[in-house]
Image (cartoon, rainbow, N blue to C red; front, top):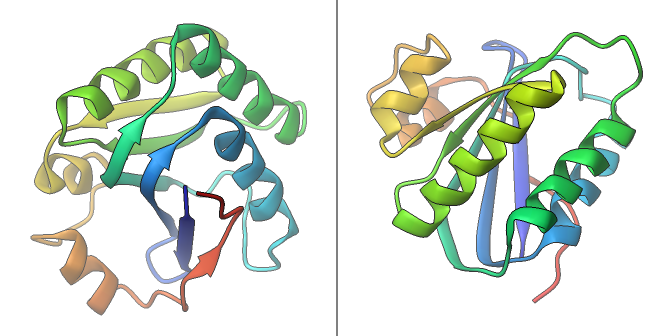
Length: 150
């Protein structure tokens, strides 16, 4: 699954998009990539776009493992990171809600799952009509890549 992301220091938001087949190991790996990025700011709100994910090979235990991996990457004492998941498809939304439930229990992240761009953008208090508009007008840097495997 390719993962690409970009950061807007103007909006103070990280935007990540996932493409293709989603597998558990790539999710935790992306946090290590973020932490190595000089523009990454721990605690910055994140918008994770799963709109272009084509397949999901994840079960409850794998989603729990992903969250534990994220937890290991986040230094102790860090306030919960606001994470908004854009998951328009039924399977993606189900996984996003599962992740949200587990994250709520863990206290590591403040997660909300949304089926629409409008809902996701509103959850981050962003004034844009679409993700495309946000990317065009939000002062984002160039896309960078996390672990890319197919």
